Structure formats: C-alpha cells, structure tokens
Length: 307
Image 1 (cartoon, one colour):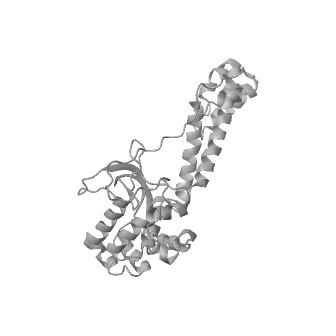
Image 2 (cartoon, rainbow, N blue to C red):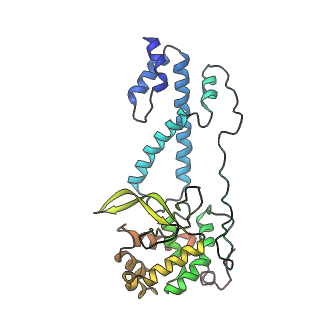
Image 3 (spheres, helix red, strand yellow):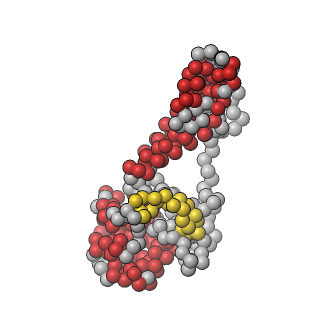
C-alpha cells in the first residue's frame, strides 16, 4: 500500500480543486517516503508562488474597466492553478531547497538566476522625427507618473475635439488601469493603445489580439478581440481624436465637448464601450487625487510640455 502511494505522488494535487490528490499526499507522507516529501515540497512552493501572485495583483491599481468582483474571483482561481503549474515545473528552483529543509538530500544551487527581469523594449524607429521623446519610465509606476506622461499629448488631442485635456487623461486611465494594462505585441512591446480602440475592417495598421471582457445583454463575457497598435503615445491620442471627430455617431458628443460630463455621457450613448457604467467610471477618475492635484496652468500647457 505504501509503495503504491509513493509511486503516485508525482501526480498528486495537480489541480487547485484536486482534494483527493491532497488526501493521498497526506496518506503517503505518513510512510515518510522520499516521493511524498518531494511532492509536499512542491505544494509548499505552490503556496509561496500563490502569495507572490496575490501581492502583485494587490499592487496593481484597481481602477480598470475589467476590475470587478467577478473578474477578481476568476483571476484568483487562475492564480491558484498557475502557482501549482509553476511549482510542478520547478520554475523558481525552490522545490529542492524545501525538500532539503523537510529532511531530504541537499539541493544543488541553480547555475543561473531562476527569474530574470525582461529587457526594456528598444527605441521605436518609426516615431515621427518632430515628435516629443517618449518618457523613459514606461509603463508608469504610479498614477501620477501616468498623468505626467500622457498630459502633453492629451492637450494636443483635446484641441481638435474641444474637450478639456484631463477628460482624455481620465478616459485613458480607465481603459489602461493607469498605464499598466495596455495590450502588448507578441514580442512584449507596448501597443500604446490607450483608448481600447479595436482594429475593425477599415484599420490597415498594426494590431494585437488579446482577451477582453465585454458586456453582452447585460452580462460580462470574456472574448478575444484585435486592437489597434501604435508606435507612440502621440499616435494613440491622434487616432482617438480623429475617430471621435470624424465618426458620425460621436457628433452629438462633440457638440457637448465643453461639458465633460455631457461629453462622456454622449460617448456612452453612442456605443463607445459596452460597460453600462463607462461614463460614470471616468467621471469618478476625474475626481481622483492624481487629476485634482493638477494646477490649472499645467492642465492647459501654460508651463510648457512636461518631461
């Protein structure tokens, strides 16, 4: 019996809801077999990874369009399973160390760091020669950094629409979670899509395909969609301004651009987003500290472009 249990520990608790596997692991551990000890070490590693993922999620701003109790529930279930998968692959090289602490043989130290930080994307050669340089710190680490990075481009786009620049900053903040949830290309570069504009049939430029959440018949559903990709922040704001000012369905919103609340309500009524609370969420961000802290002169560009 003990031999049979020990022979199966490699497959125990392979999914987050595999309670039977955990019970078998407990029974195998009573035999003090090396296989059971190694399996227990991987479970401890999974718990550690899960704690890391939870801390990372909590550090992410919770103002995004996709942030609600339902998505947080599924994100938590996904993180639990991801932790088990990573532990099974010994991704952090902790299994051997934990096994040793439980009484196993000393683990060999890894030959190289287990986790490496991704390299920053190379400078984009396609940006216009006369365009202001992209901020060095991107994506921004804080909402304040996000505001400083995009405000100069928001001013330029706001002129053609007739809306206050902070309205565009707030909309971009909602769509991207203050710059932390921007779709990326397969090689990890930012798409600079700050306004969630999808790549329809008329779009001839670059695009990225990513999962997204949309409201369909009043219910939130997970879908996969293609979004436009831009070479820079300036290009993203310019395309948004062109879309709003040239699409007939947004003309009613344009006529109310001098009134931020009416403009946002007009966008929602025109079907800019499927979220029924889209306009109200942007209004809430407009009243948040990062935007309220802006000096009126800075909003209007009286102090020159921010760097």
